[in-house]
Image (cartoon, rainbow, N blue to C red; front, side, top):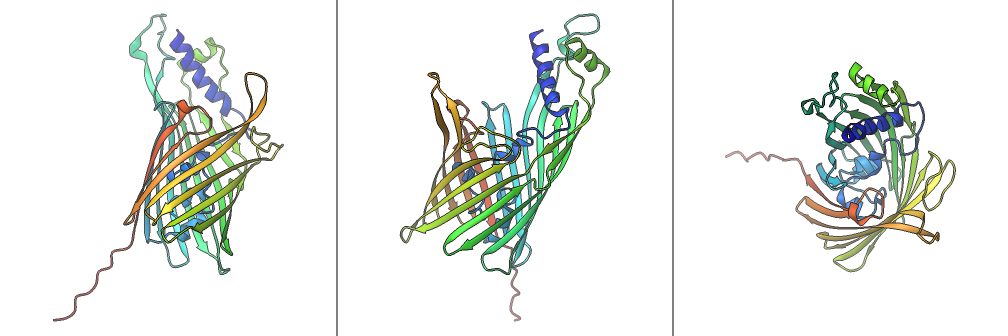
Length: 365
C-alpha cells in the first residue's frame, strides 16, 4: 500500500504543477542547469567567453568564434545518486567567414519509475505482475544561428528551441521559444548579453489517463488533471569577462554574470518582485593552451542557521581541462543548485574540433 501511495503522489504532484494556465517559478528549469564541464566548473559564468560548440546553449553569438570548420560536443552527468540522467549533444559549423549555425539536444530524465497504480486488481488482490515502469523526461532541441556584425567586435545570434516533456503515458507537452544573444569586445574587455525565452516559452500540456487510473485517482482523493498551458517568462543574463596574459605560457580568464529573472521574487543575493538578480563568477587559469584549472562560485542564497542567524550561503565549483590537437576533455565537480556535498556530481564533457578535408589534385605527369 505504501508503494501505491508513493507512486500516486508522485504522479499527482507532477500533474498539479502542470495542470494550470500560469507562469510558475522555475518553469523548464532543466534548461538552467548548463552544459559543458568547462562552464560548470566556472559556475555557469560563461556567456561572454564561450567560443565553442556549447555556444548554441550559452550564447549563440559565440558560434562565430570557433576556430575550426566543425565542432562536436558531448556531455553526460548523473544527479541524486544516479537517479536522474542529464545528457547533452551539440554540433556547430561555419557557414562562411562571418556566420555559423549549430544544433543542440538536451535530455534530463528519470527512468524506470515503478508504476504501482494498478497493483491491486478489481477483486482487491495484490498482483505484482501488474506493476509496470515509466520515465519522466524533458527534451530540448535548439537550432542556432550567429553572425558577425559590420561593427568591429560585435557578434549576435539567436536560438529557436523546441521543448518536449513526457510523463510516461500519462502526460506530454510541446513548447516553443526564442533566445537572443550578443557579444562585444572593447579595449581588451569582453561584454555579453543573453535573453532567454524573450517571447516567453509556452508549453502545451495534454493528459491521457485510462479509466482504471482515473478510478485510482478518485479513490485516493487526487485531482484529475486537465489540458493546460505553462509559460516560461524571460530571463536576461549580462556578462563581463577579461583575459589577462600572465606570461608567455600562462593566462587567466575571469568572468562574472548577473542573471535577471522575471518570474517573481527568488531567494537569491538581490531579491525583488518581479525581477531578482543572481550573480555568479568564475576564473580559468590556462597553461600553454593545453591544461586548464577552473574555479567558480555561485548560487548565493539567504539562509537561516539553527541559531536563527541570517547569513549568505554559496556554492563553489571546480574543474580541470585538457586540450590537444582539436580534442578537449573537461571535468567539473558541481551540482544543480544547493550546498549539499552529497549531491555533488562528477561531470565529464568531450569536444572535437576539426576542419574540412581538402583533397589536393595531383600534378600531371
